[in-house]
Amino acid sequence: MKDRVTRSVALAALILLGVYLFPRKMGDEVFAALAVVQPDPNYAPSFEPPAFSRPDYTMRASGRGPSLHPDSKLHAKGSRAMVSCDVPLCATMGKRILLAGGNAADAAVTVALCIGSVNSHSSGIGGGGFIVSSRGNESITIDAREMAPARAHKHMYDGAPLRAQFGGLAVAVPGELAGLEKLHALHGSGNLTWEQLFEPVVELNRRGWQASDVWVNAARTLHTLVLSPAPELGYNWDFIYKPHSRRVVDVGDIVTRPNYANTLEAIARNGSSALFYDPEGPIAPLLAARARSSGGILEAKDFAQYAVNVSPALRFDFAHNGSQYNVATAGGVSSGLALIAGLNFYSALEENGTTSDAVLQTHRLVEAMKWTASARSHLGDVNSTYWAGSVERYTSREWARDLILTEQYADNRTFAWPHYKPLYELTEPRGTSHFSVVDENGGAVGMTTTVNLLFGSSVYESTTGIVLNDEMDDFSLPNTSNAFNLTPSALNFVSPYKRPLSSTAPTIIRRDGQLHLVIGAAGGSRIVTAVLQAIIRSIYQNMPLIDTIAYPRLHHQLVPECIMAENSTLLDEEFGTAVVQNLHAMNHSFLDTGALTAMNAIKRTEDGGWEGVADFWRKRGGADGY
Image (cartoon, rainbow, N blue to C red; front, side, top):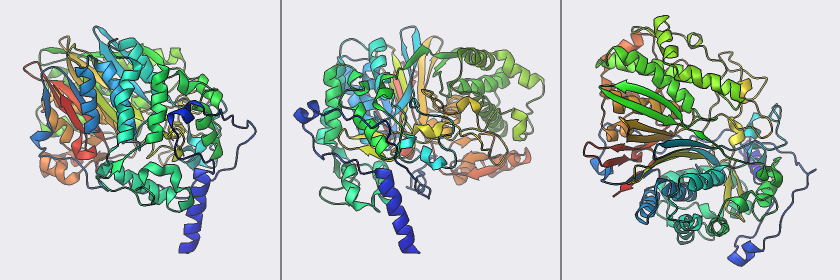
């Protein structure tokens, strides 16, 4: 039996990785002279994804999680500027860009590229993301979400849903580089060139960095899942192994990615992202061929069709304790509008006075989360008329007040999920990375970036060093329904050049006209509720930022019908068993899920400076400022 399982896993890994092999080393001259590889348009090999699920990669499995007693040393302070992200060395790199004359947008480009290099399991230029940027009186959102290929269609995963997660058919056209270029063009300082923003990251990839426990845990999971059963293909993922061996690097080992450095350097020297998206250039044909060699339909010409969407940031205003707050968050197929819906509902509840009762505070938070989930089920990449109507509805104070006036809320009970009128089943997006930047001129950027699952689609193009996303998994699949008979969202079905719905919600908040808070999170469907809870904790409950980030978080997404708690033991310690018992009496139930979101934020201090807190407790993040 064991031999049969081993052979099955090995076969799945062979199919998944493919046999499209490239040289391990590639110097600058070789890169410049790369032959254009044109995929055969009639070639689409059969592909069977692994007949097993990925191993547990929760933060609890790796010994990481929330804390009620965070170390104050993890609380960074600066009088002028701050960067907060998942990787401490990337925060410092962003700070150096600011000190060199760059602004928040400039630093964001470098930080994003740095995180994608070091935390390659969660982000990189083979993925996409959402950006909210504020400069002067202008706040914009840049939708750099990945896009379905031209040959995509809603029945492409019929009978084989795992193909949306593993292998080439899971790969969508990446958007991150186009988004970063647009950010630099629209909100950059003008003091630093595109190439200068890449230079420290190129050097980092050549010089190397010490592997963190977060990344090593991810690399070991990849090794166990895909690469171990196929050692002859191990070099395809060379940077996760010790030199001249098939042993995954240990914590503290030096990791280098020279091929990725060459790719970044070529893009930098080109002065824009055009080299990446050129269907006849040195990159897109290689990525398309690699995806197709493992069963995909991505073609080089799909890259030429990609364009970011830029629009004014979604806005929502509310008042609390004598101050006016203005929220700017991501639009498009992000969950920024769902965040606004939840905040709108919560602020309507608080209009008659903020409660200090822990039971009622928690109950109201959870009810706001449930209306957030309902709103998210109504979103997708649809026409402008539908979008405008959704924005008008969820930003309207009347929408939230009517829910209360028509007794769709009660202070003493919760309701079953149909009460909240979800339109469709919610998708379940996966891993991401968020970072926040504030510069000394009052500019700010929040960006959430992703390749989706752990190391994306598990497809790696070794010549360029790029890990390809599996963002097609964020689309809804037709002809299915979940255990609650909720059908999949027709608004989120696959179609050519469409973008899947995302849970991301990078957010910038001003207080009385002054920049106050930049925040966002990583962690799939729990992102938007984590950001909502953090805003409520920070503003309505006046919780210190370090506690806002470190303390256990709750999550509710309507179905399953339970409050997901990061750590039930800490929950009892924070609130007391009486509070939890009272919530049970209101028909709430709890499920201990372990820590599944990571959050990074920057907040203005009372003296006008900045405090930065990154989620060290869940993802070993760090903040740095001056």
